[in-house]
Length: 272
Image 1 (cartoon, one colour):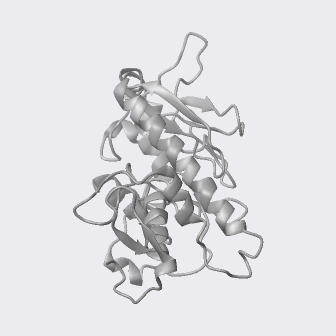
Image 2: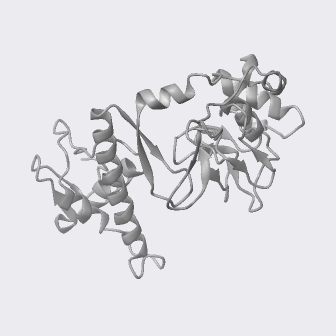
Image 3: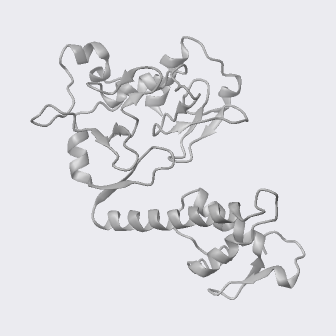
């Protein structure tokens, strides 16, 4: 019903929720798209059903990976099942946090699965003094030096926005989730507002030693293996230009780096 192709009966799957049938490939692609897009529910693609797909049926679909040299020993199948289990945990944690009025904070380090559950009012109090964008004069370096902005600190003078992951030991900001120090550029978040620090990350020349750039939306390290300048973050789904790091638009097909682009990226990124 989805691909409109002629399929052998032995390659069909009967959905236990509605007794409808569809081919294994279509169900596998549907399951993978739900996980990859981080959608909140795994529902039956056959209308008008829309019921939650049973866990056993999802795993059965993921095991129907096509035979390739890379999947000769089941590596792709194992990886897909691991991603599905991570998705299940993330959805469960998000539902629990929503019921308790908490924010789910994922460690932005690639490969780290650590999360925090933080009360929304506590996180709001830590960020209530933060300028919203680069148009706010408190986000300017001169304004900070004149004393118009100061980060929240405890009695010992430690920045309350700075957290350290107990799993990967990386340090990053609790509010903007960017690494506390910009690798390779010697730029630190210390004393700077999130808006001022974000402008530093918008500099296209600020990359780490391995050639990664930070997503302007969440700060996760990103590598471009191939393709055009149109990037879509797998963590926050923010679409941006690889060259100037501004929000993506059709005009960026002709984008070229220049000394003006970091300023434009900071301005248009704050307006978006």
